[in-house]
Image (tube, rainbow, N blue to C red; front, side, top):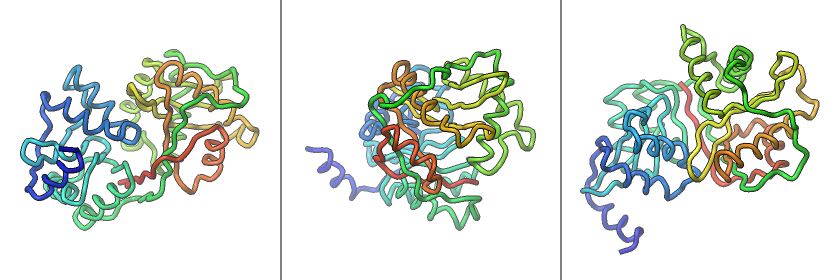
Amino acid sequence: MTIVERERTLAFRPGVVRNVTQRELPQALALASRNPSVNGFVISRIEAALIDHWRLGGALWGFFIGDHLHSMLFVGANIVPVNTDASARNAFASELIRAGRRSSSILGESLQVRDLWQGLETFWGQARAVRENQPFMHIDSDPMCALDTRVRRVLPSELDLLFPACVDMFTEEVGVSPIANGGEHQYKRRIAEVIDSGMALAVIEGGRVLFKTEVGFATNHIAQLQGVWVNPSVRGQGLAGPALAAAIVEIRSSFAKIVTLYVNDFNIPARKTYERLGFKQMATFATVLF
C-alpha cells in the first residue's frame, strides 16, 4: 500500500491527540522528513530529543489514527504544525484551547498556520500581528558575487557587543523588545548560547557591530538563517549583499549545504537582496504573533 492509499484509508478513522513518546520519535522524524526544508525546525528538535529527550525544547503532540502518526504539532515558545489536514488542525485547536495560550507565536506553512489560527482566534483573542505571506526561500550553492571577508564567527568575549544588535533586530522585526518585562537575563543567555555554538556571524569593526546574522538551527539537511541585521549607520551602502554572501558560504561549509530563511512579503529590500544572492522561493510561511 502506498503512502497516499494509506492516508486515504486512515482518513475514515477517528484520530486522537497525545504526546509523542521517546520510542515514537523515529516515526515522528520520518513524518517531518517528508518535507525536510519546511519542517526543518521540528526536525532539529526531534534530532536533539533522540539524543536526550529533555532537549526537545517543548512538547511534541501527535495526531494518531490507530497506531499511525498522521500529523504533529510542536508546542513550545513557538507552535509549529507538521503535515496537518483539517481534521488534525481541529483536534489540535481543541487541545490548545483547553491548555490555554502559553506560546508567543504560531509559525509554519501558511495554509496550516492560518487554518489552525482560525480555530483558535475566538478563544485566544486578537493576535498582535498576523503575517500571512512570508516567502520561504532556499539556496543550495554558494552565491556568485563578491564576499565580505570581514564576516567571521562572533567570539564569546564579544557578547556585550553583539547583544544590543540582537535586541535592536528583534525589536524591529517582531515589534516588541525581547528584554521587556525583565527578560534581559534570559535573552542574553540565549545569545551567549548561540555564540558558544559558533552560530553567530558578524562584521565587527572599531567596537561596533556593522552586520550580524545567526544560524537559527541546523539539521543534516538544512541550516536556517535568521536575525539578519545591518547597523543603521551603514545601511544603504551595499554592505548587506557581500556580508550575507560570506555568511552563506561559511554556513554551507560548516553546517549544511542548503540554507533557508523566510522573510516578510513587505520587506522588499531584503527580498531583492536574497534573490540577487540566488535564493529561490519554495513555499509560503505565515506567523501569528501574540
